[in-house]
Image 1 (cartoon, each protein chain N blue to C red):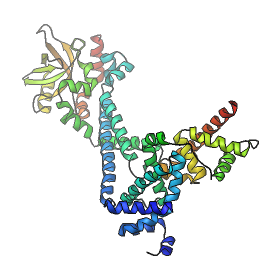
Image 2 (cartoon, each protein chain N blue to C red; image 1 turned 90 degrees about the vertical axis):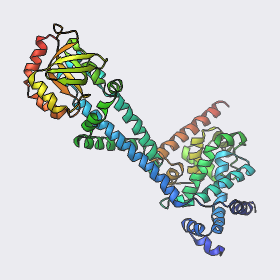
Image 3 (cartoon, chains in turn green, purple; image 1 turned 90 degrees about the horizontal axis):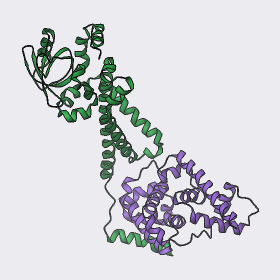
Length: 262
Length: 193
């Protein structure tokens, strides 16, 4: 019979070629790799979400009018696109990896992608509440070269408007009440500080190269690149430092902005 | 090995035996070669010699992957899945070799699909048979395969889900679409006459 011949042919081929069943551990390893890659993608997605939350919640919502002229424009120019794209990429990677695991096919695309988004958000919220996002911002993202930092956090770009009273840059030196700041275009600014701000800066920043946001006004009488600081908004750990700054009556700040007709 | 005792063993028990002694694999091959031969013939329309070549590759893959057999599945679903993957991944190659689909002995299929699709009874059975073969030859492989699994192989939704690695809901949708596609082509063929 044809079928018997075929069955025997197959067995003979297996014996002749010394075919052996692949070891169980290799399949376990392969499955574990897919699960590992899935978990890693969810963790990275969670980190991206925590940074997105940190960026959005600590965005300069109180002065969006002054910074951009309108809420929708402010949202468009300050959305953390880099992290949103990274989040999207890792969600796709997570989806592709889970699809390769043994039982995933039983669930629909909607269920799997919903689960991936839910897990990433849950992890992102946890990371955010644990302070991981602000710690990452402070320890890693701020240390990036300025060009990369601006790309990662586009909200910084709106601060590069010294003529409108907004300055952003990296501390070069802090000597007495004079702060030297290198802006994102590489220009060096002499920033005049009040005693209170000087004290705050020297206490808060242990060394130079930290990046800060300054609100104040140009001081052309003194020099071309001179700026008088009224408020300082540090990067990272914004909430803690912000609390200190928030002690300044809000009305006074807003009044100042109106007086300057920004 | 006593053939009578082997016949009483489940596929899953046989798999355990094969992992201890490869000679038992002969019995697994015998259990499935006819079924898989027919299945490949139905979805690919290859010649007998080509199907035998494909079957050899499939059974060697089955043997190599025995340690990956998930006991939550039915062994038949797992073997059909490997067969499906093999045929689909080489479909372009097989398509060129394909002959006219032959369902000569599948009268039951004609009845099943005819009832399911509610094809009008005034169509002569021979004529219907001819049309069905012709349509299955024309229909997209993804639809042909679900129609064959459902109406010829008589697999349940769960088995089809395990074979095609798709959720049961997607299988139901695919079957509905396949039926619609089938009827559309059937109507076109009648309009052309």
